[in-house]
Length: 265
Ligand code: F6R
Image 1 (cartoon, protein in one colour):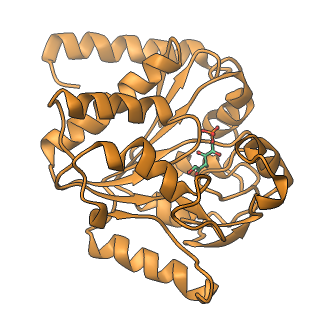
Image 2 (spheres, rainbow, N blue to C red):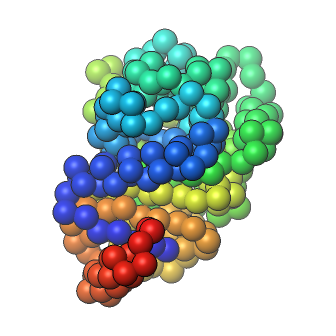
């Protein structure tokens, strides 16, 4: 796991956006895995600004989001489809037909929507870069604690803790769905590279477990320890409980020295 600790959330957003831009410069038709929630918002805003300044194009990009609430339609302001349209898709040159979120609509068979989504990811050639946030309980996507580390895209019941964390987005608690459809942990593991963003003190325990804890379904993000190309971009507050912080800073120092000697990154 590559651990990059930055000063604050603005620096995390800037570095996340830089990595997405770099990928799109190398591969215009890259397949991006996207996350919603509060953490990636600033990164999306930077990418929109980059697009407006002609620094990046999404014209050939394909996207697959991690998750979506069951029961909220695309025109519901709390749905993740609405969020993605508002924050990124409507503000860039991405083709809406190239953007995907998992959906379990009324009348759909909950057992078949996951495999259909996975087939679409495979047909697109697989995800090049999966963006992730992390829940305070260590979830990635909506893979809550005790999710199988081999889980695939499926319908999942949210924990009370996650419902409470996300209740701030719902004026009427009765409208907050308790069920979501999410990529599984095995699905996420298949991405060629993953980039997890975490900011703020509230994420410090989950970040510590993810990086330094034993691999366990109780902290689903620990599965990323088994990923070949996982990068964690965190700010000082989210890094505040790491026990080996000196070592991560030392690695970064060595990497910077190497880059200035040989270039690249
Ligand atoms: C969102 C998602 C979730 C969030 C996580 C953190 O698509 O899959 O795992 O990344 O709940 O949310 P925030 O960023 O709001 O703290």
